[in-house]
Image 1 (cartoon, rainbow, N blue to C red):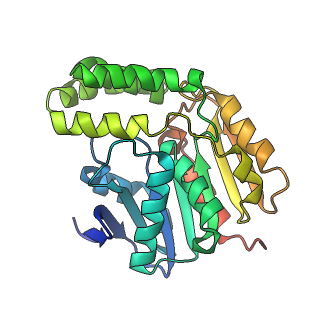
Image 2: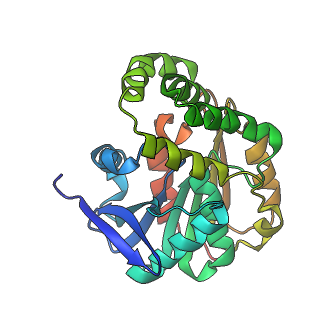
Image 3: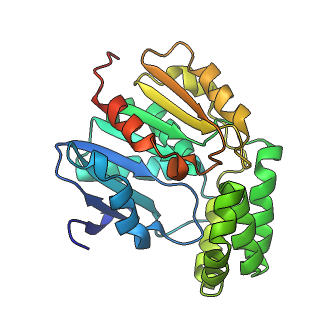
Length: 272
């Protein structure tokens, strides 16, 4: 994979996989959402999608830590990821988090403000309610039972708009045939880590310019999740909010102009 560098970072008591690409001096970090399989295998697709940012930035994508303890929460994920940032000497980061990655990104921006200069959030929520977790609960049940076809189908249907899901139905069915028991176990632990997540009280303390992206047909968290974040950050200087229509939970992949919107936001000189 030309131009893409893979690395496993060693921290105190754990390791974390990542890759990077681009030649810019500014660090742009992607924290992806929950995935049944590691996103490391999709590095070429990520590099192609974020190529508009790679001239001005060095783009990093971090997986969750490799050694997952029991009861590993989103807060723990954020803490460990921030530690890896420090290990690599990353600071003044433009941080992008999608879905579960957005929960982590909010936590890092709130608890480690010295690390983050700008924040982009997509299809995420500040409080995981029982209703919002119901789809995740179904995924967990399928994974524990080894029902991989049902898991991939339910996951895809919740994440993608209907037309996109239908186009991917065959691909998801094929992927379900090769998923391993280890991958399912890891998926369950990371899914459980969102249960009870609530950063609502910390939103007003996030001080960096922030862009929030959502879609009105988000089947996983609902459009109201973005509205709650917007309300919590209403007094933040440099806050942008964009609600798409018909792009689904995966608006971070399906909105055709999003990377250009990100580029403009990152280039803007907004005082903190």
